[in-house]
Image (cartoon, rainbow, N blue to C red; front, side):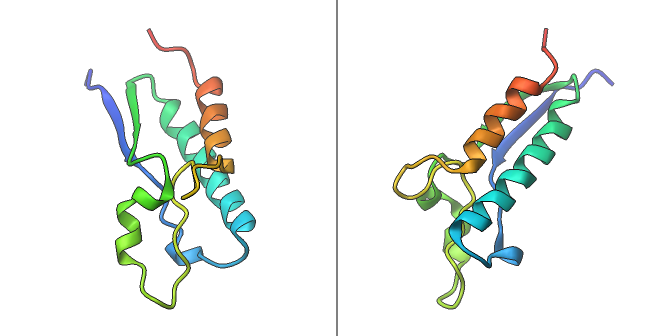
Length: 101
């Protein structure tokens, strides 16, 4: 159809699987991110990729966490701006993506 695809406001809501240590959760999120990005970036019509934000504290998902739930870890950097495995998964997916014209 000749349409361009835009990947916007990306984040990962781990609400259904928010268990385990932060490191375990981060690895699951990174794995999901890489699989999903590999699929989406395989489409030649994919033109843009935008995250919701860069650090977890700025994610819209945080407003839906109630007192009994773990704080979500949906973005490539933690609240302290330290790199999480998701950031490496994103970089790896971009490097592996087919070249765009």
